[in-house]
Length: 220
Image 1: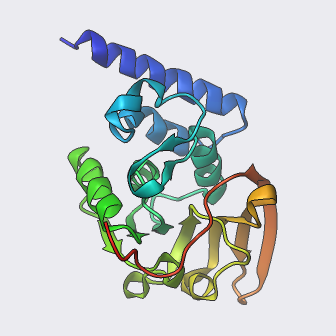
Image 2: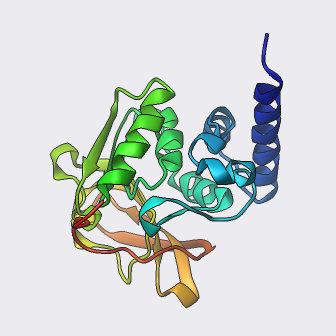
């Protein structure tokens, strides 16, 4: 028998999926994964009631948990296949990590803040079925060469231009989604890498995400 709180949680996830579909998120695997992940688990306990609102939430280390619509739009643009390997840059709260883990064959996530990496790993592994996920504390702009190349790369922090290290770790035929530009005019961009190494950029939408920072955080 389910608890009343469980039923409320399921209802909120179902409502989120409906809202995301109305915003144009279309891949069924993305939506199905989102419907199974309790977003409130990844939000600070004091803000759990706002977990399903389409707003960014502050988390540890001065970082933020992105709006669900931003995460869903980015992951939808990746179009992750069940046999794909994925690299995520910026684990943050771990919510996007959990969604990507549900729809990929293998993935690695790189986070510059040790506290965030450890908390994200605890939450994601707590949901189960995460043995194929590698958590790395490191400089996300350098990627994670040990498991490269990747069919899909998701970058959750804004850059001025696609980092060369990440482009090099993207498999020919692969896709990278990342925010490009200053805070006043960021474009969520889909980069498709051709079999011949050519690059094609498409704007998916506008976002407002923190800027990427080089290196590993000295504290926390």
